[in-house]
Length: 286
Image (tube, rainbow, N blue to C red; front, side, top):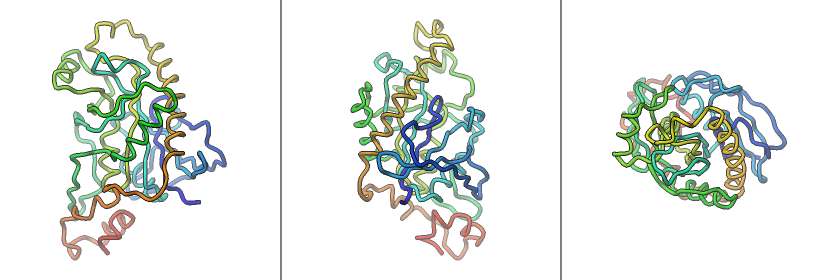
C-alpha cells in the first residue's frame, strides 16, 4: 500500500497511538538527516508516515530543525499530504488553552532559516499568498470538531525564532497587528511543502496565553506541560479522524505549485542540482 499521507508531531505529540503494522524507516536526503526515523504504519485503513518534529526525546531546537531534510524525506516516501500539529501561544482572549486553531496565514519573524530547496544554479519563485492547503485545512478542522475540540478556522500564525518566548513588548506588538497565535516551527514546513507540491495543513494547539495576558505570570511549567499532554491526546484523535476523511485524488493547486515557478532555463541548471531535486522537479525538468 502506497504512503500518501504524512504526519508531523510537535511538542507533546511524539507518537500516534492508533498506528498499527509499524515499521521504522530511516531516510537519507541530499540536505542531510531528518529529525529522526519515520514510523510507517496503518491508520484508519491508510498507510501513513509519522515524524516527531523535534526528534526522539525532543532533542532539537526549533532553529536547528533540518526542515529541508524533513520535507524532502516525506516527498521521497511518496507523501502528497502532510498534517502537522504544533504547540502555540494565544494572542487573543477568545483562543483559550486547549483550543485548536487551524491557521490560513503565517507571518515570518525568523532570522536566517533556510526555507527553500532552490539555489545552487536553479531559481524558482512559488506563489505563497495562501500558504496552506485550503482543502486539507478544512478536513483537519472538521476532524478536530468531530472529536470534540473547540476549533477556530483561519487566523494568522506568527512564526518567531525562539527558543525564548516573546517579550511583553513583542507580544503586545503582535496583538496590535491582529495576529492570532504564535509558534516557532510551521512556516518553514509550509514553504517547503509547497515547493515540493505537497499539501500542508496544521493544527495549532493552544497551550497558554502569550506574555501579553494579565494571568501569564501565574502560568507554571507544570500547567503548560499538562496542557501539552492533553493537547497531544486531542491531536492524535483529530489527526486519525482527518486521515480517515481523506479520500481520492487531489484537486487543489498544491499538486502543481511548481508549474509556473521554475525560472532558470533547463540547459543552465547544473546536473548535480537536477539529480538532487529530481523527485521535486523531475516532471518539469530533465
